[in-house]
Amino acid sequence: MNWFDLGNPRPLPAPDPYIPIVWPDGEAVPLPAWQPGSVDELSFAQLVARRRTRRSFGKLKSEHLGALLDLSCRVHQTGEASLGFPITRRPTPSAGAIHPIHLLLINPGEATWYRYDAFTHALKAVKANSDPREARIAMEAIVPAADATLIVFAAEVGKVAARYAHPASLIWRDAGVLLGFLAMSAEALDLSFCPLGVTGEPWVSQLLDEVGLVGVGVAFAGS
Image (cartoon, rainbow, N blue to C red):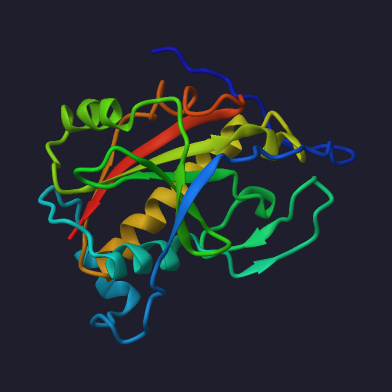
Protein backbone atom coordinates (compact mmCIF):
# COMPACT_ATOMS: atom_id res chain seq x y z
CA MET A 1 0.00 0.00 0.00
CA ASN A 2 1.21 3.50 -0.84
CA TRP A 3 0.75 6.22 1.77
CA PHE A 4 0.46 9.72 0.34
CA ASP A 5 2.09 12.33 2.53
CA LEU A 6 -0.17 15.40 2.55
CA GLY A 7 2.34 17.44 4.50
CA ASN A 8 2.06 18.88 7.98
CA PRO A 9 -0.37 21.84 8.06
CA ARG A 10 0.78 24.98 9.78
CA PRO A 11 -0.58 28.52 9.96
CA LEU A 12 1.00 30.97 7.55
CA PRO A 13 3.01 33.85 9.11
CA ALA A 14 0.34 36.18 7.70
CA PRO A 15 -2.91 35.47 5.85
CA ASP A 16 -2.75 35.22 2.07
CA PRO A 17 -6.13 36.76 1.20
CA TYR A 18 -8.25 34.75 -1.19
CA ILE A 19 -11.15 35.86 -3.38
CA PRO A 20 -13.88 33.20 -3.05
CA ILE A 21 -15.65 31.62 -5.98
CA VAL A 22 -18.62 33.62 -7.25
CA TRP A 23 -21.43 31.11 -7.66
CA PRO A 24 -23.66 31.45 -10.73
CA ASP A 25 -26.76 31.00 -8.64
CA GLY A 26 -30.27 30.81 -9.99
CA GLU A 27 -33.55 30.46 -8.15
CA ALA A 28 -33.39 30.35 -4.34
CA VAL A 29 -35.55 27.88 -2.43
CA PRO A 30 -35.84 28.84 1.27
CA LEU A 31 -35.72 25.93 3.72
CA PRO A 32 -37.69 25.59 6.96
CA ALA A 33 -35.66 25.83 10.14
CA TRP A 34 -35.42 22.97 12.60
CA GLN A 35 -38.13 23.23 15.23
CA PRO A 36 -37.27 22.02 18.74
CA GLY A 37 -39.72 19.32 19.79
CA SER A 38 -40.45 18.30 16.20
CA VAL A 39 -38.87 14.88 16.84
CA ASP A 40 -38.36 12.68 19.88
CA GLU A 41 -35.39 14.11 21.76
CA LEU A 42 -32.85 11.48 22.77
CA SER A 43 -29.85 11.74 25.02
CA PHE A 44 -26.51 11.79 23.24
CA ALA A 45 -25.75 8.31 24.57
CA GLN A 46 -29.05 6.99 23.18
CA LEU A 47 -28.41 8.64 19.82
CA VAL A 48 -24.91 7.18 19.52
CA ALA A 49 -26.18 3.71 20.41
CA ARG A 50 -29.00 3.92 17.85
CA ARG A 51 -27.10 5.34 14.86
CA ARG A 52 -26.94 3.08 11.83
CA THR A 53 -26.21 3.48 8.14
CA ARG A 54 -29.57 3.03 6.43
CA ARG A 55 -29.97 2.29 2.73
CA SER A 56 -33.76 2.35 2.39
CA PHE A 57 -34.89 5.81 1.28
CA GLY A 58 -38.12 7.74 0.86
CA LYS A 59 -38.21 11.26 -0.55
CA LEU A 60 -37.20 13.98 1.89
CA LYS A 61 -39.81 16.58 2.71
CA SER A 62 -38.62 20.19 2.71
CA GLU A 63 -38.90 20.39 6.50
CA HIS A 64 -36.75 17.28 6.91
CA LEU A 65 -34.01 18.57 4.61
CA GLY A 66 -34.14 21.97 6.27
CA ALA A 67 -33.79 20.43 9.72
CA LEU A 68 -30.92 18.17 8.61
CA LEU A 69 -28.91 21.09 7.24
CA ASP A 70 -29.87 23.42 10.08
CA LEU A 71 -28.60 20.99 12.73
CA SER A 72 -25.34 20.21 10.93
CA CYS A 73 -24.02 23.19 8.98
CA ARG A 74 -26.07 26.40 9.15
CA VAL A 75 -24.10 29.59 9.92
CA HIS A 76 -24.75 30.82 13.47
CA GLN A 77 -22.32 33.70 13.61
CA THR A 78 -19.84 35.46 11.31
CA GLY A 79 -16.41 36.75 12.31
CA GLU A 80 -13.55 38.79 10.90
CA ALA A 81 -12.67 38.67 7.21
CA SER A 82 -8.88 39.05 7.08
CA LEU A 83 -8.68 35.98 4.80
CA GLY A 84 -10.73 37.73 2.14
CA PHE A 85 -14.00 36.19 3.40
CA PRO A 86 -15.61 35.93 6.84
CA ILE A 87 -14.89 33.04 9.14
CA THR A 88 -18.04 31.52 10.61
CA ARG A 89 -19.34 29.61 13.59
CA ARG A 90 -21.45 26.57 12.67
CA PRO A 91 -22.44 23.34 14.46
CA THR A 92 -19.49 21.47 12.91
CA PRO A 93 -15.89 22.31 13.85
CA SER A 94 -13.62 23.40 11.01
CA ALA A 95 -9.91 24.26 10.78
CA GLY A 96 -9.61 27.99 11.40
CA ALA A 97 -13.43 28.34 11.37
CA ILE A 98 -13.09 28.48 7.57
CA HIS A 99 -15.70 25.87 6.56
CA PRO A 100 -14.45 25.36 2.99
CA ILE A 101 -16.90 22.61 2.00
CA HIS A 102 -20.00 23.45 -0.01
CA LEU A 103 -22.88 20.99 -0.05
CA LEU A 104 -24.28 20.33 -3.52
CA LEU A 105 -27.60 18.52 -3.72
CA ILE A 106 -29.53 16.67 -6.40
CA ASN A 107 -33.13 15.91 -5.52
CA PRO A 108 -34.73 12.71 -6.83
CA GLY A 109 -36.26 13.07 -10.29
CA GLU A 110 -34.67 16.49 -10.88
CA ALA A 111 -31.94 17.56 -13.28
CA THR A 112 -30.62 20.53 -11.28
CA TRP A 113 -27.61 21.04 -9.06
CA TYR A 114 -28.48 22.96 -5.89
CA ARG A 115 -26.01 24.57 -3.49
CA TYR A 116 -26.86 24.90 0.18
CA ASP A 117 -26.36 28.52 1.23
CA ALA A 118 -25.50 28.22 4.91
CA PHE A 119 -25.87 31.98 5.45
CA THR A 120 -29.46 32.25 4.23
CA HIS A 121 -30.54 28.62 4.91
CA ALA A 122 -31.71 28.14 1.35
CA LEU A 123 -31.02 25.97 -1.67
CA LYS A 124 -29.78 27.89 -4.68
CA ALA A 125 -29.95 26.43 -8.17
CA VAL A 126 -26.49 26.34 -9.76
CA LYS A 127 -25.96 27.14 -13.44
CA ALA A 128 -23.54 24.27 -13.82
CA ASN A 129 -21.45 22.70 -16.57
CA SER A 130 -21.64 19.10 -15.37
CA ASP A 131 -24.82 17.08 -15.75
CA PRO A 132 -26.38 16.09 -12.40
CA ARG A 133 -28.08 13.11 -14.05
CA GLU A 134 -24.68 11.59 -14.87
CA ALA A 135 -23.58 12.00 -11.26
CA ARG A 136 -26.77 10.36 -9.98
CA ILE A 137 -26.44 7.40 -12.34
CA ALA A 138 -22.85 6.83 -11.19
CA MET A 139 -23.77 7.08 -7.50
CA GLU A 140 -26.84 4.85 -7.84
CA ALA A 141 -24.63 2.20 -9.41
CA ILE A 142 -22.99 2.00 -5.97
CA VAL A 143 -26.13 2.26 -3.82
CA PRO A 144 -29.59 2.07 -5.44
CA ALA A 145 -31.37 5.16 -4.09
CA ALA A 146 -33.85 6.49 -6.62
CA ASP A 147 -35.86 8.39 -3.97
CA ALA A 148 -32.92 9.76 -1.99
CA THR A 149 -31.39 13.22 -2.11
CA LEU A 150 -27.78 13.05 -3.27
CA ILE A 151 -25.39 15.24 -1.26
CA VAL A 152 -21.97 15.97 -2.78
CA PHE A 153 -19.14 17.63 -0.82
CA ALA A 154 -17.27 20.29 -2.83
CA ALA A 155 -14.18 21.73 -1.16
CA GLU A 156 -12.97 25.23 -2.06
CA VAL A 157 -9.26 24.62 -1.49
CA GLY A 158 -8.16 28.26 -1.76
CA LYS A 159 -10.05 29.17 1.39
CA VAL A 160 -7.93 26.91 3.60
CA ALA A 161 -4.75 27.80 1.71
CA ALA A 162 -5.36 31.43 2.69
CA ARG A 163 -4.47 30.54 6.27
CA TYR A 164 -2.52 27.26 6.21
CA ALA A 165 0.44 25.76 4.41
CA HIS A 166 -0.21 22.17 3.30
CA PRO A 167 -4.01 22.49 3.63
CA ALA A 168 -5.05 19.17 2.05
CA SER A 169 -5.29 17.05 5.20
CA LEU A 170 -7.29 19.78 6.95
CA ILE A 171 -9.82 19.70 4.12
CA TRP A 172 -10.18 15.93 4.33
CA ARG A 173 -10.64 16.15 8.10
CA ASP A 174 -13.28 18.84 7.67
CA ALA A 175 -15.07 16.56 5.19
CA GLY A 176 -15.05 13.67 7.65
CA VAL A 177 -16.33 15.79 10.52
CA LEU A 178 -19.14 17.21 8.37
CA LEU A 179 -20.09 13.74 7.17
CA GLY A 180 -20.27 12.55 10.77
CA PHE A 181 -22.40 15.49 11.87
CA LEU A 182 -24.81 14.90 8.99
CA ALA A 183 -25.05 11.22 9.94
CA MET A 184 -25.78 12.00 13.59
CA SER A 185 -28.26 14.76 12.67
CA ALA A 186 -30.05 12.37 10.32
CA GLU A 187 -30.31 9.80 13.10
CA ALA A 188 -31.70 12.40 15.49
CA LEU A 189 -34.35 13.26 12.89
CA ASP A 190 -35.13 9.57 12.21
CA LEU A 191 -33.92 9.87 8.62
CA SER A 192 -31.95 7.43 6.46
CA PHE A 193 -28.35 8.40 5.70
CA CYS A 194 -25.65 6.53 3.81
CA PRO A 195 -22.12 7.81 3.07
CA LEU A 196 -20.50 6.55 -0.14
CA GLY A 197 -16.82 5.73 -0.48
CA VAL A 198 -16.26 8.08 -3.42
CA THR A 199 -15.15 11.70 -3.78
CA GLY A 200 -17.64 13.19 -6.24
CA GLU A 201 -15.05 13.62 -8.97
CA PRO A 202 -14.97 14.45 -11.84
CA TRP A 203 -18.35 16.17 -11.52
CA VAL A 204 -17.32 18.67 -8.85
CA SER A 205 -14.19 19.98 -10.58
CA GLN A 206 -16.15 20.28 -13.84
CA LEU A 207 -19.11 22.03 -12.22
CA LEU A 208 -18.14 25.66 -12.90
CA ASP A 209 -16.04 27.66 -15.32
CA GLU A 210 -14.06 28.91 -12.30
CA VAL A 211 -11.46 26.48 -11.00
CA GLY A 212 -10.82 25.67 -7.37
CA LEU A 213 -13.44 23.09 -6.38
CA VAL A 214 -12.67 19.44 -5.68
CA GLY A 215 -14.94 16.61 -4.61
CA VAL A 216 -14.30 15.26 -1.11
CA GLY A 217 -17.34 13.11 -0.34
CA VAL A 218 -20.82 11.90 -1.24
CA ALA A 219 -23.84 10.68 0.70
CA PHE A 220 -27.49 9.78 0.21
CA ALA A 221 -30.21 11.06 2.55
CA GLY A 222 -33.90 10.22 2.66
CA SER A 223 -36.89 9.67 4.87
